Amino acid sequence: MHPAPSIILFTTLSGLGFGLLVWLGVDPTPPTGWVAFAFYAIAYALALAGLAASSFHLGRRDRALKAFRQWRTSWLSREAWLAVLALGVSGLYALGLLFGLALQPLGWLGAALSLATVGATAMIYAQLRTVPRWHHWSTPALFLALSLSGGALLSGRVLIASVLLLLSAALQFWVWYDGDRRFARSGTTLASATGLGERGTPRALFPPHTGSNYLLDEMVYVVARRHALKLRAIALVLMTLLPLLLLQLPLPHFFGFLALLSHAAGVLTARWLFFAEAEHVVGLYYGKR
Amino acid sequence: MTALPDRTERRLGLVIDLDTCVGCHACVVACKGWNDQGYGAPLSDQDPQGGAPQGTFLNRVHSYEVVPERGPAQHVHFPKSCLHCEDAPCVTVCPTGASYKRVEDGIVLVEEDACIGCGLCAWACPYGARELDLAAGVMKKCTLCVDRIYNEALPEEDRVPACVRTCPAEARHFGDLSDPESEVSQLVAARGGIDLMPEQGTRPVNKYLPPRARDGWGEETDVLAPFLAPVAEEPQGFLGWLDRTLGRL
Image (cartoon, rainbow over all chains, first blue to last red; front, top):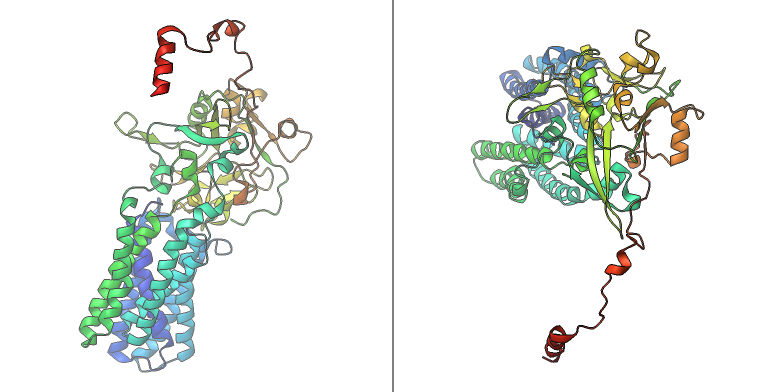
């Protein structure tokens, strides 16, 4: 799939922002006053920047609000609703904290809604049977694990962040390993796509047109897949291993910040791969993957 | 609403005969021509006279070669457009309700005024039947020429999709696939019509008629063939000597 910068930024930034909101919401001894203001300002800046970035990939941004209409069936619509609810409820909770009032149940509700927002984002991809690499429970699991890791890093929870980073590393490693096999497991081949399998082995002979088209630009992204293995290594190190190491050093504010930067850069790389490596079944019709 | 209807009153669709399609692309041109001027945003082209032209098409003709275990490969032209699936995944993913399936005839349409151009429906379609128009920023797809088939201003023979009307090989058939007595249903039954990617669970309405098996290396390709068969089984003369000598080495 085409790795659109708007979508990569959106999933990364909003993942971090909502992850931070989760930890702020469940904190039994939450920060108050200006400290609370600073934490919530960071969370809101990240989440809102992500949501703003997502609107850049729309063909008609002027109609973006219509995306709230079909929450009964559409994960994209559910995500929009959950994001607004999560930001609204967390905002109310934060408002209380500013004045030293911790309405704990409101915090829990905000945390749950933030978690659900990240889950809904992941479900947009996981629901697509047409992209076997994504059509799997591990897609929301990894999105949630990374969001919670990033949130724990942002909120300065060293032990929890370390455990979650380790978990994320293991999950990401397995997702790459298993993901490489999912297209073959899906059973969709050129033979099933054309129905011509019974009489022999079908092969694309020539394309329907000489130029490119929307489908090929959008679903069949092959540039730089050849560097995938190197990028996977870079992503895994930056996203999980290096932050894990940095967290164990003294000077938590300095090295913690470095860990956060490294983690964010790693997630951006991993997200780029998430899209660039995903093969849509329509590529079969064009003799491509 | 982007929920799919439980059932549709009719299932209008196409039956495409892969045996008779000659790959002339007339359906592609007729589709582009008709959908440039009537229903919704016109299908645009980008850089049409330049070095990298591309554009929006609702119907494209692929070409495949099928290589059997024995015998010659068979060449199959393969027109592909929206299959108007009963379990259309493109409809349910739509966040705005722009994508919908009609209860009265099962046609899958896009209400372009409500489309935000997010492209998720195109991602959800396994067949590549939806293309985002880069000029209008909205999703385009086959409408089954909904502005022709019910259009009483047109002569009756023209009240079929443009691709069907234009096909010189009569490889494209249009009708109600929910009616077992209809011409298209009879064709599907007689020729063993198939679904594309049945494992995707989309239950397409459009059916494809597989090509008939006909090409093969016959026992005798020509009446003169026996006279052209090599006469000498063993090489003679100089060649024979060479053959024996080389064999001894």
